[in-house]
Image (cartoon, rainbow, N blue to C red; front, side):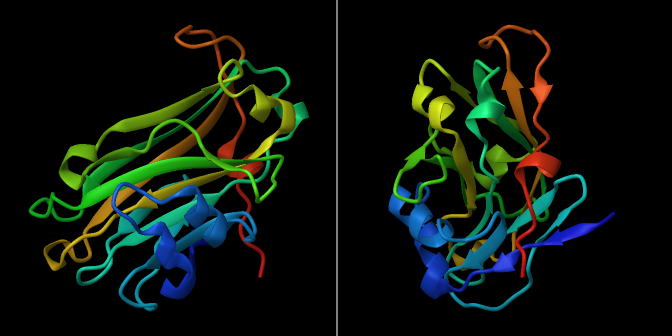
Length: 216
């Protein structure tokens, strides 16, 4: 299976994404706003270490930082244009988690937050829905999603947007060092009718349409 590398961001630039409860809009903007679409990773204690990778089926592992720091993995999607969104009443962005690499270390804080900038403008970073938070033992082997409706987020559908998903291990202590949580099956669906209807959804294709490897 082909793998996509995750580019390392050192603490001086990426540390702002590491915070209890997830990062702020300013942190997402300052760290990811000027970067190309792609995957990024970093930790709080140092700038070296093993990088995660993303497999062809979209799975990656969140790896906690060493010591009492914290870590993050983030993905910046390509922009969804107004034309792309025109026929949809809502968007649903979802993912699944897998098991833990060490089932004895279940207390590591995990945060998943979704952000967007209108029309791709770096000056308009907003959060979509609430941050999903929980301890590693409680968020493993589950499915999560955000639904973004035209009724609630009309300006997004009118202007298009670039999306930023930040998966944050939060501030942690050395007892959780190198814990890994699998995150997989990233999906973005355009829904033609509001949820909870079971009408068929058109898959926008996160892997092919919305995510492009950072060019070097």
